[in-house]
Length: 186
Length: 220
Image 1: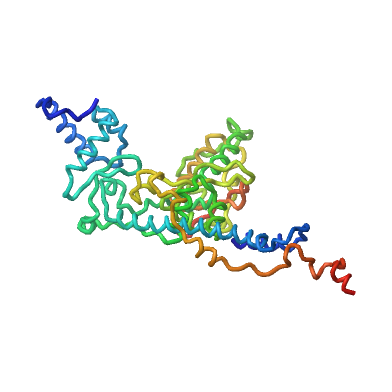
Image 2: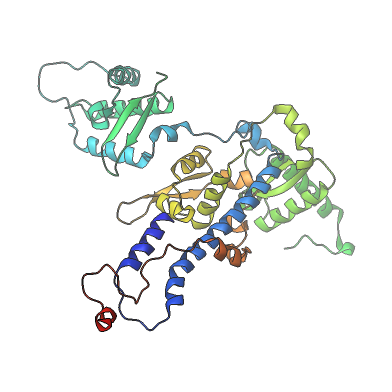
């Protein structure tokens, strides 16, 4: 609403073409838009009141669903909080990009890569995050020249850490860099 | 096919069948973890969805005056306790049902009517930033992401979930009252909008503009 007020004010400051003297209606218009907006908002408020009344009744309605799904405590989804507006779609898309660039087999060199498991990757990520309070970029979690298999295992490790609420993931801009941070309870 | 057999033609067998089907429905609903849609019930009981609907209503009628009832929620049938006896049940396993704030309920109402809807759209309707409220609603699984809008910026879209329906005892979003049928005091709204601060009226010259306005010229 503040933005709209600003828009109205700035529009009124601009020079207007000559108009027949019907000032009342001209000034009335922008107010009419606000009034309409306020009316719509009050409708939602009215519905909100009805929803509250319904919820108050439903508080005392129980079914087997409550037993199976654990007490109706809102089924809090911890993973979302920690994804901080990074949709799981975004995470998956970022990973797919990485994966498409990966080598099929170990690249060059004589160095033998250690065998890796999800558990090992979890430990590795946690260790790196401990020394990076500013977080680590998603792409940096994955080793250069890693095979597809290693990338997948690393990604699984990240998902596990998110599920366990030991890390959180954030993306400042749409399609921007995704960063991973340790959660303070680690 | 109808279940309304005329009195004179009722055979013992059909009556037993009816009673059995009703009992079968009762057993199934007793143990169902989620509300069951008519189609699914029909499958389980070996009847048509319409017959399943009827049976559910019959069962509910049979429960009159009892502690449980059959309700229609989130598109399906469910056996649940009557709210009058809720306090007793609550002593049993002390559920922690959360309460939503005014802001959360308003935001939820907006998502329910406007879905799928983006965060900026919700903000515009409320006139305030709704980020934390929306996050809370997602956390409680009352709303969820529903893809992205194909406009610049590709913002996330949100919609209400089945949990939302269950939490408020709704069968579907269509059960919400029609927005335009909700009475709002329009005169009050007009009075409540503050008069806008005065600016130059549309067809009067701006006193601060450089060009000499015609009336001032003629006055000299």
